[in-house]
Amino acid sequence: MIIDVHAHWGPWFFTMDVAGATLATMDRYGIDRAIVSSTEAVIYDAPAGNRALATALNDQENGGRGGGRGRLYGYVTVNPRRLQEAVRDLAEYLPTGRFVGVKIHTDYTGSPATSPQLRDALELVASAGCPALVHTWGPSVLDLAQVCLDTPGLRVIAGHMGADGFRYAIEAARACDRLYLEPCWSHAPAGRIAEVAANVDARQLLFGTDATLIDPSSAFGSVAAANLTGETAERIAWRNAAELFGLEAAL
Image (cartoon, rainbow, N blue to C red; front, side, top):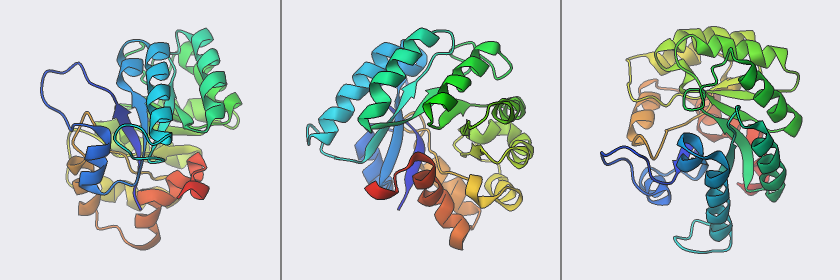
């Protein structure tokens, strides 16, 4: 069983070819479930992208084009600078059961982890009772950990686990047990995953690919190179994600 907690649905604005259709990519790599955000919602218009993704997930659930019933779940993308829209979207989509978390991209929205806008957005997420996947890079993962500590009940995933700041991610995860790490990145430094896994509670580790922006082979290769076994390997592959997003009954 493999659950990808960092995936996307919809075309990107880049001119090069990327990983391709979501379900086809999942089939190629044996990914059983994926939690996806709308690319339109992330980079352009959160309400419009959330609405389009809701339609696609409903079509999937009803056995529509491409099959894949029950394999995709959604993130409600939140723009911290448009919180009134976020309140409306959370109220509309979370009760459907097809959306299981929130996605926030700090760079595209101009809302870094130190901003009051992100703090307000994550307080909203905590009150909604779902996890949030938040873009992190470098030492920003430490700032995200502090927001998590300051926000009762918040559960947050550090997207890319800080990328080149993965050692900051180790410090952040050890400071806050409600902060989770997922590894996708367009680079694959030797020993990165093994170092994180050796220094962070295995219950805080997740698997993510950044598909369809990045081919999943990058994340699979990085994790495979860490030679993880037993409970740690199982927790990263799927168990932690199933527990965090409440997917156990659907597996």
